[in-house]
Image (cartoon, rainbow, N blue to C red):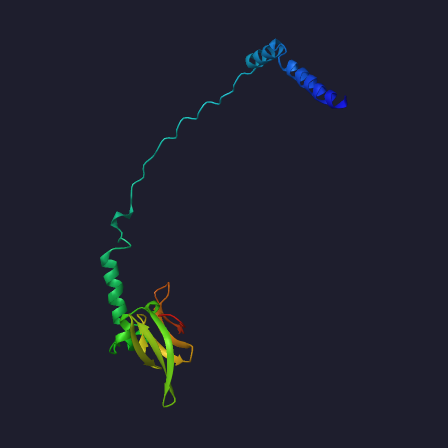
Length: 178
């Protein structure tokens, strides 16, 4: 008997709730209409646009910052008084590996001949043998030291102010790379 009372009670409860939804909504509609009538939007008027006063351009007579005239003057000055770091590099004959950027080179091994260390570099699928004192890379790089796993070199580069400075960089041994 208890089994039958539970579904019947649930059905009566649901019916009662549904009956409450169908109640008269005239009171609700009257309140909504009253709220619509009472509310008045307040819109601030827009400010009129400010008058535009054009200004004359005064930079027309100045030298353009990227003009070829300015660049040629800077290059002539540098040619007359190159830094001591760069002067020695400009007067020597370039070596074959200076035509390639450093990131296109990889160290694939090292050998020792008569007690002097040599590094094996792969460039464009060709193998080159280099020693300390050789030049490579496009920044006047000179090999200063060779170990079994690394080639250390000194490069001459321009900093942000245009001055030539030395920096140290290296090529690491690339194992298993073909």
